[in-house]
Length: 330
Image (cartoon, rainbow, N blue to C red):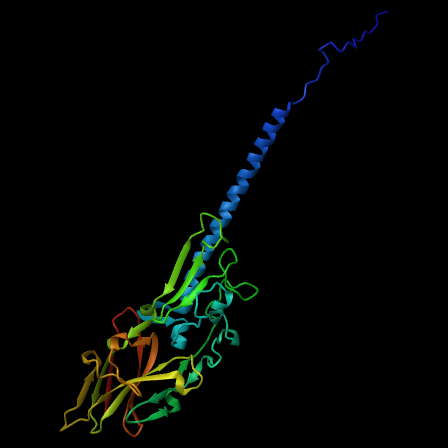
């Protein structure tokens, strides 16, 4: 009867098993690590790119919230903080990344009423207050009421649950303003809080000439048929003030009475520097550097008895030829 013989000799190689060497294991782990890290690095880069794109888009929203101009059916449409309020959004005075710097564009509250003396009136009907030499100081009748005042939020997209408007990495924009009327907002990528290659500065601004027009460029033509002299005034609303009368600044010029059946004519584009005036100041010596904010402004023709003899509104459009306004006093 045949028998089964098993060779247990350890020297027999038939049944030997061989494992991985340490070097082979290290190489395998290295390859696995590389394979795993490659998509993670790609995803991280894509995430940072999306954050940067979001940041750039938000900077455009800031600029539009301060001032925006568009065209509809060949008509200029102006909007933004400066159009409603006649001034730039308030800032702390020094460049700061604090989220509160953009609060004026998000909602009206006492936090950003920085000097405490101002009362930013809410958007609604407001009667202009004229300050003239001949007619004196007076509030115009209710029929000349203007729609002015704060009507935020001017920033509606991109505000987080805490009411802050931050860049794509959750860091505040650096915001400041200048004495000449520039409003600046900056992505401070070089502050150590942002990854390469997005660790550079990106600056944005609404410059003074983006939202204002020199007084010398206004095109107002007045023909006076009356036998009494008149004062032609533009009433400029500026919301940052403590009382109603202080919110209005008046620039005006005089036009002589008609004589011998011949009307008196005044054209602002032909004015010398001495013809525009401001009460308490006298002649405006530099109308080229005296600025009127973008938007609709009421124009009044008033006699010495504070009677409004003509009225219209002038649309002031920055970086554009100003529309002509024709007024007649009969």
